[in-house]
Image (cartoon, rainbow, N blue to C red; front, side):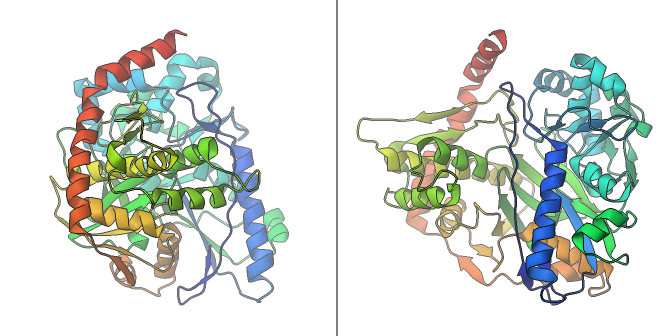
Length: 490
């Protein structure tokens, strides 16, 4: 996404690449496919929107999703695919560590819940189950580190993304020795740590030429998607929270102190050395509705997923609040906050003979948002939340945004551009250029012109169904465990 210096969007483009699930708990992506897709999309954006209008590109700021792990050899060549945030293969290692005194110490030091999502657990799994790849690895990178290394030769990781690895001490900003020891690595196996404003050198000459960019462009290492979404959503004071739903989702607040939770239900990630973004993530956001659309949607053309999803939302709107008693547990990818159960599974509950396809559509949307609500309610045990902001392609669908307002019983505001991650990257770049004195001032510049207000009757109905949803999520713990074990035996 490209912005002018007033913060207006000049243009945007997106690309996609597949995620490979070769086994039930595996989730991987091809790093070179990601890199090539990024270059292709950037080149098209420049050639179609930037260069013809004779804009001068001043800076490029990077964002990326958290928790990816990519082993590379001494020549910088990937050793297989990148393991993504959704990968659950390390669930046994995670449970063993979480149940130990060491697990509590590592959580307290790093702010990252002990869960298969974290690079700490992923690297540990590799050391125990894929020794050949582990031993051959010269470094373990995030996908953002890999892309920046390809563009500039510099191997770096910002404190913000590093704080989501389970390997960074978020108080002294160094790699945590006890976490490194547990994973079986030393700090030289990880990228160099840098602030979010760090410039990782210049673009290589071949990319300058290919993209039509000058030698003087400043690259900014940037932050994680979650932290930038919080900044771009203008969440900078007590009483506000942001809900992000793209493929995955999260509810976040920001503060100058770590949110301490004895049950280890929340993350505490750094935006800068003085600002902690705290909250809970879900694995099961828009990716679940996309799964439903692919299985049960009516396709106008083979690849028109957006059209299909739009039609499904229209079908959902024909069904009453509560889907006439049909409840969906959306845990197709296990779950993180607040239940932190990698073995959790999806299911429809309350099905009767009168339910039709449109009931399943609405129940699917409600189930995704009930899970978001469960994170928000848990967060309110520690922080006061008076109002919400939403961002992300799924959360910003008006039907879904109104549903969020009704379920939470709070007003929800959105900006003109639903991509507050890109907005956060702009604000980071603008602050670096001196357009804002600091990130506090930058965040307060965010305008959210549209507000959805809760409908009290709808909230009353949702509360009753949510109570059942919440009980099912914990009551089925043993059954989740049993069915996961059966899959492992096959």
